[in-house]
Length: 183
Image (cartoon, rainbow, N blue to C red; front, side, top):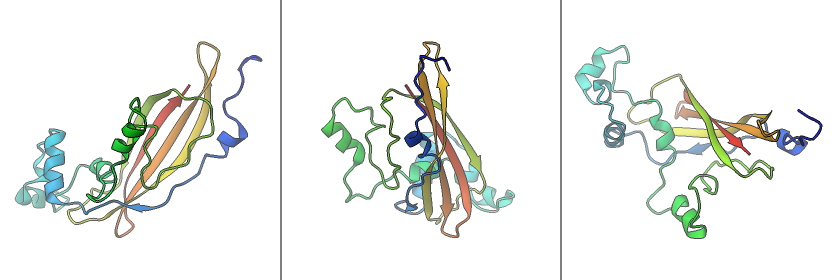
């Protein structure tokens, strides 16, 4: 970093590393109708997701779900709840549908004046496929915040949010990591 570059990784920003949100129970169980709609939406015809006889012949021994489905299940809201995406657009018609959305288990904002947000990548660690009937619980965490310097000489942040998904037996289903760039 050059002498002129002001660090974006302040002590307040650094203190956010390791901050976790509440453990939240996703609304509804993993069910066959949601599984059917999800696999149709992502165009994945794998018979492990719908053919009972075939699924029982696999080493899983049952119908399984795509592992990433839990992250979508976790964003479902009850019919009697206010939709946070709709609310964000009502409050700010120029909302990007991402940054101003308040969801259960949300983390506090990173205290920075860097406001441009870019996707820096996603990863998924799979431990166990969710089963029909599972309840899903999730918890968010700021797992890493790094500083880099752009070609323009200005510092920017790479913020990584980790979400752990578990079932009702406290078995780890998967971990997602979503990194974003703040400029």
